[in-house]
Length: 247
Image (cartoon, rainbow, N blue to C red; front, top):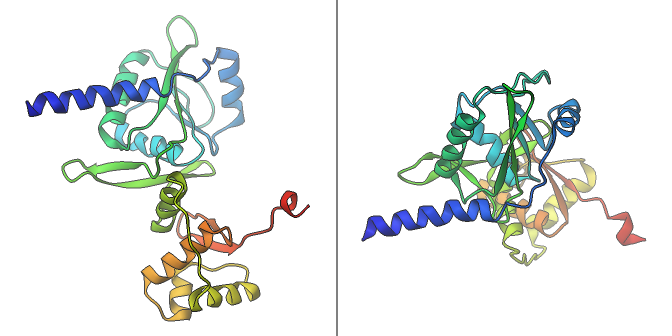
């Protein structure tokens, strides 16, 4: 009976993945060429082929944790479009990887765009996930993984602070901010300095990593600070007032 339940859950999960993402507009060859001409960026990634599907899942997860985006298989980094001879096989491998390694499930659509009678490009349109963060599982048995986000044209591993902010915002968790000593300390510091990171805050205030991290997360969720994710480290600045609001 247990295996029937597990099989049903897997079938339902796959069905919902496609059901929830069936509204993406198909793209023709001219639109594909225009998209490729823009070059890789925040919402666009090229892959020559799906030779390492697990590695490609970094891009899938990063798009899901960010604003969404298009993953084009059969396009080289330089923008040339050699295409794929067997796009269905590449799609099968990627579908299996998404279903196996991405948690929670990722919403996406896929499309085969013909280049000619022999070659095609495979387009995966990844939606911004309603439930964040999405993880790429590296330990399937223990269901442990890493979260990635998009930074310009790269997919980078997210920090604890980014994960906490993604979680709170996607679940609409209210943040009650009390201006205690740590909050006042960091605001005084930022009134005289352009930016701060967790490590600097820890040393200056002589506090633990978790104290520094939680304080910066709360101030960010309260729209007091702005988080700037980085490849090596994140940093925070005082959030600029919205000119539309002040007007």
